[in-house]
Length: 164
Ligand SMILES: [Fe+2]
Ligand SMILES: [Fe+2]
Image (tube, rainbow, N blue to C red; front, side):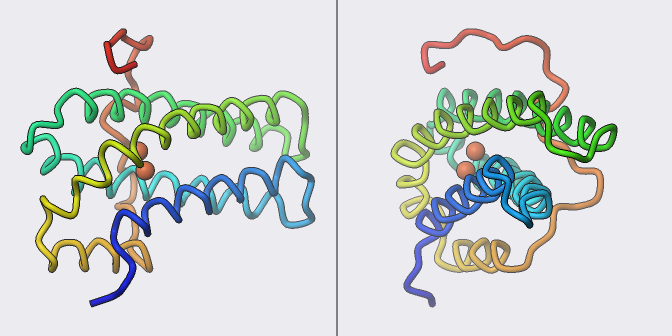
């Protein structure tokens, strides 16, 4: 049993992802690599949430917040795709890629500001110790299955919600 809770580890991963995106925006020498690593980390983070964490939260009555999180994942996933496509065409940092990255950071900030205080604290009472340990281990070295995309990756325009 580790001293780090799953909620703490998930929050730490939010910060790591932000830092990777900032490394790119700040023009760090390894910024491109850190951006790519942050993007894969975010996609994997979303996989863990959508496949393993959100279903029990939904079953415990958190339907509305989970709905909003899924919608925001879908919107962010599309931004990830846009940045990756832009980098394929033009690997050098440019203003449009930077603008997309800043848009992603804004979305992440709003998303994490809801997920961290509203959803993550519920995990402790819902998940068994063994499940929480399994997901902590996944954060260490787990992988998103090839080709997995989030539930709302191809969703249309954002829908309104009282949680939005
Ligand atoms: Fe998250
Ligand atoms: Fe999330």
